[in-house]
Image (cartoon, rainbow, N blue to C red; front, side):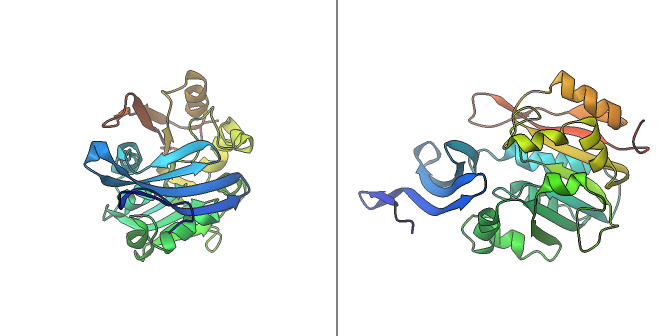
Amino acid sequence: MGARAAFINMTLEFEELDYQQTPLGEIVLRRRSEPRLNGKLVYEVKLGDEFLMSSMFTAAEIQLAHIGLSALDNPCLDVVVGGLGLGYTAVAALTITSVRSLLVVELMQPVIDWHRRGLVPLGKELVSDPRCTIVHADFFELASTDGGFDRTAPTQLAHAVLLDIDHSPSHWLTPGNSKFYSVQGLRGLADKLHAGGVFGLWSNDPPETAFTSLLDTVFRYSESHPALVPGASHSKQPPFLRRLVHGIIE
């Protein structure tokens, strides 16, 4: 139990499960009861003063996996997820029987530890699946360098890359991530996909014309899918799906 756990009338209202310093600032995992959901426990993550994620709103994260992978007709898929978070995209991918391997790339070690320690609801399910490997690394650094995302198998390509790290292509978790959202950055990622592979990007904002134009420079086919989040006052846009059909278009 966290040092700042709060109990009112012996009923759990708020509990800080972990607090760690990271290169991006302090990160906090907390759990609280939600009266609007009949006291259901909700898990939330904050980085500094900013809310990163909540287990109240997971529809978009789940749809990122389902929509992205449904575009593929292959019985043995190798999938990369950029950003572990609370694990909803990764676990959704593993529910698809054609997924042969799942590599999850996460920058913040505390987030990985939460899953391995079972502090988050999906942690044990995720780490116990033999198809899943979680690596502590910078997704954007791996995307920009030669070789695949799996450094133990540098020539292995992915059938799909599902990315949920930044808030949107123009609202980044850290300014250094901005380089990825360019023709050069996207081509680096496309080099790591099989022909006919899929790049799925979650965004909290509606599709942006400028970024869509960049994507259309690199990929052959694209589409966006709004996801209405139950209980929210706005729609999230889970994936800009970018399907690489015949390689990079120069």
